[in-house]
Image 1 (cartoon, rainbow, N blue to C red):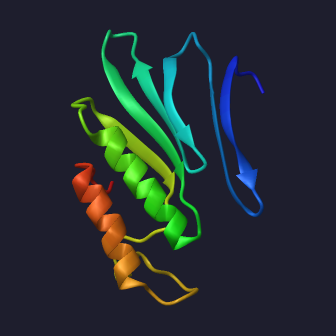
Image 2 (cartoon, rainbow, N blue to C red; image 1 turned 180 degrees about the vertical axis):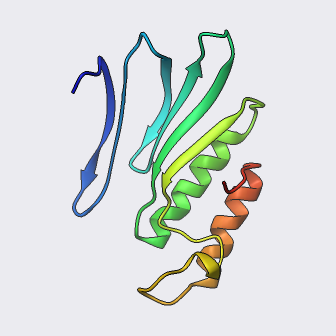
Length: 124
């Protein structure tokens, strides 16, 4: 594929699976944490600055997603570095994000919003 570095979390059944691929000459990544739902890296930029980046695939199971929210809270505590979190959370911040499928679940949305707020993240 043309990348000299790869980290991954294996898929389980029909859900999950995360891949991060990069070239060391372009960026210096250090994996700081991983679980079934998240790959978390410290990024060392060529400008001698650092930031954090996390790739997420949230479980379709709401009780498993709660573990992701707790992991994210733990990762956000004690750091002031900029943090980009991206991927599929399998969660909605509000009813306006809902398109088709099962009905909107307010309590699951509240859990996700609380996590976003607790981690000082913003929806882009």
